[in-house]
Length: 487
Image 1 (cartoon, rainbow, N blue to C red):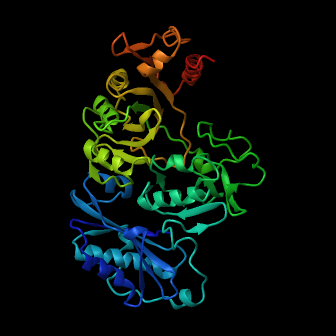
Image 2 (image 1 turned 90 degrees about the vertical axis):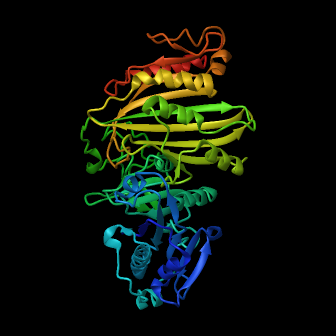
Image 3 (image 1 turned 30 degrees about the horizontal axis):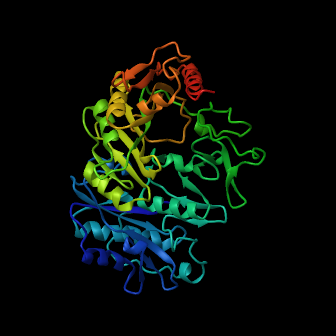
C-alpha cells in the first residue's frame, strides 16, 4: 500500500536530476505542472496521473526526518523531495521508487522507505493497466493526496510511520472543506498520527480509519468498528443515529452501543507523560507587532530554550525566527495563517499556531505539547511563571494546561488513551477586569488563585493537582468556568 517515496539528499536536486527522475517512465510520458508549479505530475498517454512530485524542500531543522519517517537523514541542511504514486495503478509505485532512486543516486542521498529503492532502469508501461482499467481514481488529477472521492468524503490511503500535516494533506483538507466534504485517512495498524492531524479527523464524517485483521476497520481515535457503506466509512450497522461517539475520553467498550475493536483496547502503562498548554492572546494590530512571541515564551519557561523550527506544513523546515514567521503572516493578511512549530530532538515538543485578524486585533491561538519519559517529571511548577509572562507581556486571554498519560514521542497511536487532568488555568488582565466585583478571585475552588503581574491590573492563575488518575479536577474546572461566566 506504500505510495509515498522520499529522496533525502545533502544537496538540492538540480533541474537535470529532476528531469532524469521524471524520465523514469521513458520519454513518452506527459508532464503536467500543478498547484502553480509547486507539483509536477507524470501522466500516461491517456492523461492518467501516475506520479505526483512536490518541489524539493530544504530542511534546516534537526530531527524531522527521524520524527516523521524514522529515517536517518544527512546532516542539516538537507533536501526532502517527495513523490506520491497514484493508488490503483500497478506501475505507479515502481515509477515513484525509480524516480527517488535516480534523485538519490545523482545527489549522493538515500531513499525512504529503503525497500522502495529501485534500479535506475526505465519503468516500462503496464499494458493491461493502460488499456483495460478505468480512469484514475478522482480527484487524483487535481489533488495528488486523494485516492477516492465520493459525494460525501475524500479518502486518503497512506502507509507511513507517522501521518503528518504535509503540504499534500493540507491541500486535500482545504479542497475537501471547500466542497463540504469530510476527509477519511486509511492506514495500516502500525501507523501513528502527528498531533497536528488529529483535530482534522476527530469529527464525523472525517475519520482516521485503521485496517485490522480481526474486524476489518476501526476508528483510530474512538475504537468504533467501521465498514464501507453509502460512500464512506461508517460505524457498523446498528450503531448509527447518532454516529459513534467522538469522545476519546471514554473508556474502551463504553462508546455508546458501538462495538470497539480489540486492538484499540490494548492499553500499556509506560509511565510516559505529555504536558499540553492551549492558550490564546489578542494584541492590538500595529506595525511593530512581532508574532510567535507567546509561544517562544512558553518554550523558554518549560525547556529553557526557544523552539527549534517552524513551517506551514510538516516537516517543519525553517530554523526558529520570529521575524520570518511574522513577515510570512503579514504577507498573507488578512487571510489567517497556520504554522507548525517543533522543539529540539532531545525534548519532544510540537505546537500549532494560528494567526488571524479579528475586530479585537491580531489573535494567536496556540497549542503546544511536551513529552516526558517515565523517569522525567513534567515541570508543573513552571506553569505559573509561563502564565505570568503571557499575562504581562503578551496580552493573554486564557490558558489551559493538561497532563496525561501518553507517549513521550507525541505520536497519536490507534489505541485508547486515558483522559488527562487539568494542571492549571489562567485568565488575562482584561478578562479579570471585565468580570464584576471580585468574581474572578471569589471562586468555588478550595485553592486561592495566584496573581499574575501587578495588583493594579492582574491576571489570575488557578492551580489544579494535575493527577490523571483523579477525574475530579475536571469537575472543579467545569464549576470554575461556570462561575467565571456568571452562570
